[in-house]
Image (cartoon, rainbow, N blue to C red):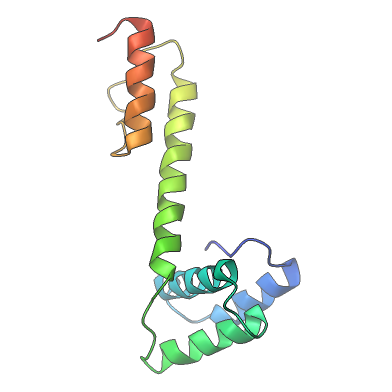
Length: 122
C-alpha cells in the first residue's frame, strides 16, 4: 500500500493497524482519499481521525471515493513513467528486446520515439 507523503512512521504504523482486516483495494482507496484531503488542506482534524472516519463510512457501506481516484491515477501514471524511464535506461544504445512492451503511456512512447530517431531506427 502507498501511504500519503508526509506521514510520520508512527502515524503510518497506526494507520496500518486501523486498516488491518480491510481488503487491500479498499484500504488503498481510503489512503488515497486521505492523501487527497491532506493535499487539498481540507482535513480539520488529525490525519488519523480523518482516516478513522473514512473507515467507519466504508464499514457502513457509506464510503464513496471522491478525490481519491485522482490520487490513484497520478500514482499509476508515476509508476508507468518510472517504468518507462527504467526501460529506456536499460536499453540505452540498443534496440529494445521484443519482450519489453512500450507502455500505453504518452511519455514512454515519446521517449521511445526520441531513442529510435537518435539511433536511426525509424
